[in-house]
Amino acid sequence: QVQLVESGGGLVQAGDSLRLSCAVSGRATSTFMTGWFRQAPGKEREFVASSKWTGGSIYYADVVQGRFTFSRVNTTLYLQMNSLKPEDTAIYYCAAGYSDYDVPLRVATFWGQGTQFTVSS
Image (cartoon, rainbow, N blue to C red; front, side):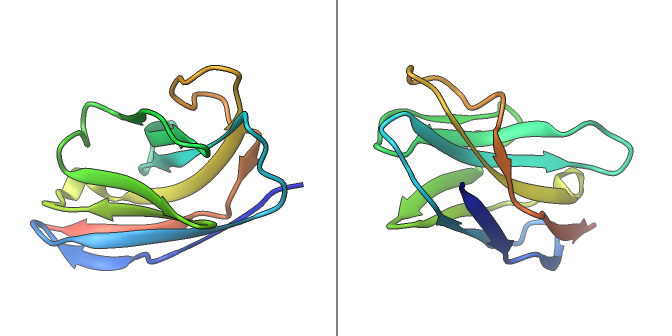
């Protein structure tokens, strides 16, 4: 079983930066993948970024490419978000799953509880 616990939400202004964290516990195999999703008010949950636990490509959604950086230090995931926009307002979820291939994490098996942040204009 894998557990994911996010932290780092809050209220920021447009143009600010914010970093989200996600503590990962449980068994991480060679096919383990982690990433971030978000769900804005009234919208479906969408992919933000992901990577295989053992390294490889880091995938980003087009809308965050160049502004967000996904990283991992030991068992903690980070999502560094710069140049924030009001449309980045959402509940952000840490997610994990498995894949034999180095591809974006599109279907997650495990989810964190989510952390909310709001970007004011």
